[in-house]
Image (cartoon, rainbow, N blue to C red; front, side, top):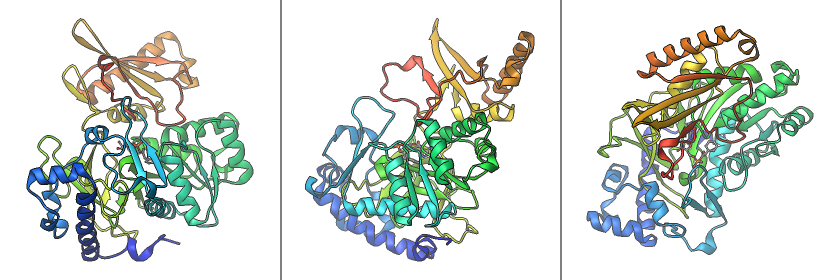
Length: 440
Ligand code: DLL
């Protein structure tokens, strides 16, 4: 089984664009009629539903941001009567007003189909046992992959995150072949298996579907080795439905966007100008056929690049790179732009596991930049002088990647708190009043 819905996933570009155009015209009419916020925005811009004839008219429409979602909390952007909705999900990682997304049964089906496509692209079939170790509840990770696994007909283990002993026991006893969780939890499960003396070839897993937070190519290699599997990336966000907006195929060269449901654009985050294919910029999504919470031109803040290059897996859906950071989570330390993923890259290159925490503070009007990094048992057994030498070497490597000098603190193995969901990598003490937290 190569595709979950072959005809759709491999359709020619002209057909994709035709379907997108037809759906967009219908969707714009739907939101204009049912959502006051859109009607007012479009009226302000002098755009009527009749002006939207197809996908080329997309850029006539206004952008929507997370602030708009918060301002319209909870029901302001709901496009169907509340009685027609069957589910809500909500975002993690922010304080203050949460973002609440609504789903009709049609929307849940569409979302679960997207997740089933991701599972098949990772090599799963109805013969597989799928262990879902993303959090369940308001977070979309657990419910999304759970639904996809059911749609495909896998035996589904709805583990949720946490209780790693039980995760490992069920994995071994029930023969889980596909693991779905955050990459940081996958790495932790890998460590825990090793601690229990279970070699990578002795667990039943063959593939993993990991997303919801940034992870580097080096981290992928580490997880693949520790678990003895092929590790696939999956992307999505609550506002646009959840996991499965895009997913990796066996080529592992970017994630295919489910273009029959979502249109992707890349814009300049400062000017809002739409950039040509291949440019790096902020990813914007339009939901083509969701009923309850159909966001148009939603600014994700994720920075990435889109490509229409042919993929040898046969899927024709365009691909996006892993998000390279967020237009709003980039740290500015002593005037220098720093992406946490750069720090992770250096750590993995220098032979450290990606167990680290960045702490930024301010003293005497100057930024203080510390990185706590865990040693492995061998490093920890070294002399004090040896450890100091290591700290200096790592600081030099960081300086050459980032352009500024962090203070490196090598800490004892397993002393940085492990995450069962999204890892908290950054503690920015300078911004305690902000309601936004970095989530990768
Ligand atoms: O994290 C949905 C999800 C669940 C995706 C499970 C994949 C697997 P939110 O909590 O709304 O939704 O967070 C969305 O997380 O805008 C990205 O910044 C980040 N993100 C999601 N997937 C990836 C990924 C879920 N594969 C935000 N790589 C998004 C990097 C990711 N960042």
